Amino acid sequence: MRLIHTADLHLDMCFASAHIPPGFGNRRRQSLRDVFHGIVQRAGEWPADTLLIAGDLFDLDRVSRDTVRFLQAEFKSIQHVPVCIAPGNHDPYVQGSPYAEETWPDNVMIFEQPEWHSRVLDEQGTTVHGFGFDGPDVSRNPFGRFPPIQLGAVHVAVAHGSALGHQPPGKESYAPFDPAAASVNGLRYLALGHFHAYTPIKGDFPTVMAYSGAPEGHGFNETGMRHFLEVEIDAENVRITPVASSRSVYLTASIDCSPFTSSQDVVNAIRALPREEGPGTVARITLVGTGAPEWRPELDAIYDAVAPAFEHILLEDATEAVEDFEALAQQQTSLGGFVTRLNAEMSDNKKGRKHTMLARARELGLAAFRNRPITFQGLERD
Image 1 (cartoon, rainbow, N blue to C red):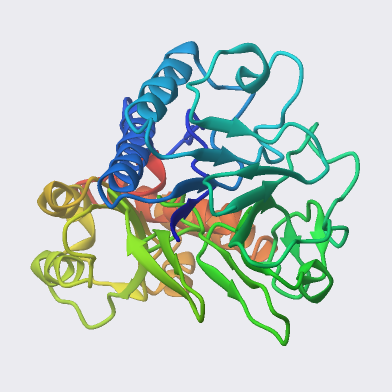
Image 2: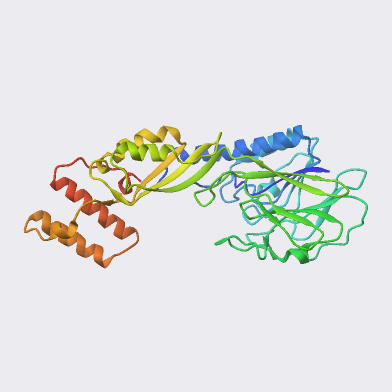
């Protein structure tokens, strides 16, 4: 048996942020569609015996009719491949959901209820089992209550939930389960959704389990290449192959600018950052350390020099100016009074965004007093 396993597309999700340019969200939503089209195309060409979608295919609160038509056309394009969908917490099977209200191609099976149901795929008895969320949280948790399996055929399952002991930091728990208790003799593979990174679930139990992860990152907390899974099952083995799928990858990095003497050093350091070959890069680059007065006014020029190499770049200036602000505060001048006031406010706010804003205000004020060019790259270019 050959199957493709994916989950957590979140089609039509919102990418709103103060740090993104107009149109960025539309481009990212199109990227999600392009990724899904590639997965469907691979399922048809391989061909897979089934395409398993383990929940959160879309975000119910935002899904558009246009996206529904897109999905219907994609599934119809692979009518020879059964598609089995286990709705998750973001795309539950509820009244008004496209799952419930729309007509789907005959090759699509949507597991409607929070209890295990089965679909037999062929004359050999190859079977897919699954359950679906019936609300933002499942009303009852079927994990650990799998029905008995008649041995002899290949059985796989698809579901959305949280494997205990494998929860990523900060990830909310939905349909939590103990992997050992969810394992069933005769169930060869359990395709999981909810965790956004490829996560094999290993243990001393018979069922092979894995999260495919989201096939495209959704933000700076999901950096690097993402994947869908190709799974091959024979009498002896279950082989999982993660397939790189991202059209865009997120990158975060900090660059210590203390050794730099010119803006070209900063440009070279940003250009030298390691990146995935092929996909576009959405980067958040933070400049740290000390910044020489010769190049710090050139941040706008630095941004313009490196921006073409990225799909989008957020360049954050967190460097500290090479200035003796304590000495400046001792001057009996208007500049000295200005620096004294900012120093006092920064002393009362020693960390966090307010401290950064006060440091930036002090720097801009100093530049204005000295008639230096003022850059608006950084906090001011949100």
